[in-house]
Image (cartoon, rainbow, N blue to C red; front, side):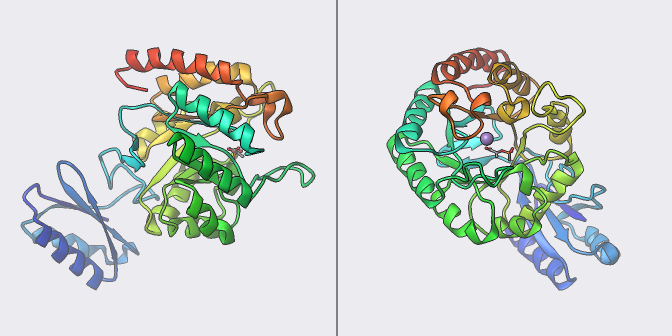
Amino acid sequence: MVIILTSRATEQDIEDLSRRITAMGYRPHVSRGEARTIIGAIGDDRGKERLQALQALECVEAVVRILQPFKLASREAHPENTLIKVDGVTIGGEKVVVMAGPCSVESREQLLAVAEKAKAAGASILRGGAYKPRTSPYSFQGLEEEGLKLLAEARKRTGLPVVTEVLEPEKVPVVAEYADIVQIGARNVQNFSLLKRVAECGKPVLLKRGMATSVQEWLLSAEYILSGGNPNVILCERGIRTFETSTRYTLDLNAIPVVKKLSHLPVVVDPSHGTGHWEYVAPLAKAGIAAGADGLLIEVHPKPEEALSDGPQSLKLEKFEQLMGELKLLAQALDRTL
Ligand code: PEP
Ligand code: MN
């Protein structure tokens, strides 16, 4: 249930309502929007009559039942777009936020070359995996903490905040210590113990859609993080499995307007994993923005032919720069910035 306050409600009213909601056995979740404040009452719907009675208070406009199974993630509970601020970068606003970098952090030289080019070309965030979820145990597994240190060095050098993946609950503290945004990969979207841990890590979370996860399941995974106390979730569409084999996955562009309608959370698109081929990254990056995504996640490598992971889908530095120029024009046409 959500309690929608009138525009005249005061801080004192919010405190008083939160106390009443807690006393009824619910957990209050306050969302302060520009126009009005909404309080989510998290818990079992069986006591809903008592919550509905709160409508008698002058500061309460309405008490409504959220119909979606995901509550805090739903637009019903939070009509305005969520803006997530990471070190001066706002995700979810008019700026198209580009997160770029190698699939895996491989060396200082490799990472700094990409980081500097990404910065110069107008990217806002540096990506790079230090712990890699590889299909084969014989594939490169990542530089681990050494990779995190290199990411921190690249951030210091360029000023770009960094996003990097965490694979296991035990590693959440160390990854959150170095990362500005913690990534949950497609393979872990329903690893609920990991979701509960990142809910407590104090950093925004980039939550990738699983390759066989419906939009509803994906938003319920986001709900784990939100209900665990972390309001800063960025969704990332990265392609799903279909019968089509000419690309690595099928980038589900439908999901962007669908999620935008259902949820207030920002959504970014990953055309690199979504297609698996560098030639298709630029057209799908543009399509993602045209479909309403808040940003992009793009793999870039100085020598894709020597990459230790995802070389075939990585853009060379010059190709990335060229794409950024094209995206600037597209952003302008859509009344956005880049
Ligand atoms: C990645 O970002 O490099 C990655 C492993 O992505 P996904 O989880 O989408 O496969
Ligand atoms: Mn990758």
